[in-house]
Length: 134
Image 1 (cartoon, rainbow, N blue to C red):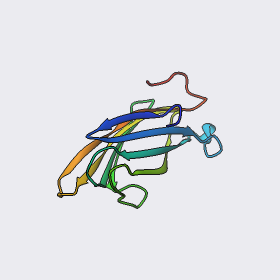
Image 2: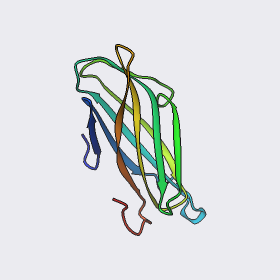
Image 3: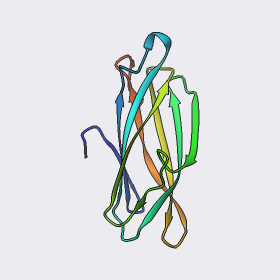
């Protein structure tokens, strides 16, 4: 696990997130701040699970919250057998130099039951941010 990663384990599924500010894609003078975030999902349980849906809540420094819901992640619904790790990178823009993201995944067990897995809250802080939100 990388330094600076945010981690949470729910029902034997560990989710780790590492955010990175993308200065080359951001334009602070235009109120555009862009982050990438790398997500690592590890099945530490004894049963195979499938990531079916994602739910994100993205809040900027002014308290404006956007909700993002959808099937899978980056166009996939990964299947994780016991011990499997799935990693992906995505990103988000903000209109402020800092913000916070938190969310959950809906996982499906082999028997078809859906259960929620928490994504840890993580702070998005650009070099222009006055103070961290966490």
